[in-house]
Length: 284
Ligand SMILES: Nc1ncnc2c1ncn2[C@@H]1O[C@H](COP(=O)(O)OP(=O)(O)OP(=O)(O)O)[C@@H](O)[C@H]1O
Ligand SMILES: CC(C)(CO)[C@@H](O)C(=O)[O-]
Ligand code: BAL
Figure 1 (cartoon, protein in one colour):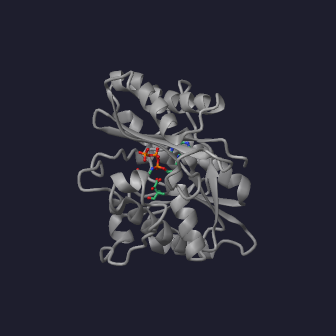
Figure 2 (cartoon, rainbow, N blue to C red):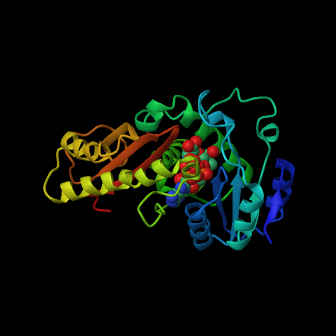
């Protein structure tokens, strides 16, 4: 049975009752759960004795023209999926419970959150770090699992945890994909059939660049051009960024060296914004 904790007070009581020696694993989400989320639940289970997930569509990380109001909230189906995955508890707070007096204290990471999605979604990562630190303080997990699909989010959270000495181990879960390569995302349901048919080109563009890199092309700008050329095959896809970056700092690079690189892409199909990425060449 998954225990549903609908406010901070119930979470606090549940947390206080956990036996001292038990390791607690935490998977924060915004709901509309899919196999990508469930893989993180399994990873948390491997790393801990007790697993708690959260579902909270955090208003603080959405821009004024983004999809906060239409973000899917299929809560009953989500609970059934968490039950089936053997998740022990779900924290399901309301906005009022999370931000009873608004949010006038913010957590801002100022380096890795700068480029890529940070540049395209001003204030987004401050919303993410603020809510994740709040959630960590409330849940007090030993380990928390985040998906590599949001690679920059992982890097920002890892940085915050290091900078603030937050006593939580951060793990990354690999990207779970559809059979045709499209990364699973709660936002995929917005896609029209035509856009859904074009969407696998995003992953194909990443694979094409990986192949070019293996074929000897190490120039970052030329590699990005290869990726963009694949996406140009469909006039339904509007590229927001297609970048080859340092895998850790996410800083700009001119050549892919021994540290490898993060290939990162964001694109619009209709009104839907999708992101994807692939790490190449890293000796890790
Ligand atoms: N395809 C995936 N594979 C692995 N992890 C994923 C995948 N999609 C999302 N996640 C991870 O699940 C966690 C919760 O993400 P979230 O609830 O925002 O889902 P999402 O599908 O990424 O939604 P959206 O794409 O609409 O932002 C994040 O750590 C995210 O990186
Ligand atoms: C980490 C997170 C749950 C914070 O709201 C969100 O950004 C997400 O779902 O990736
Ligand atoms: N999956 C990252 C959260 C967001 O897009 O707002």
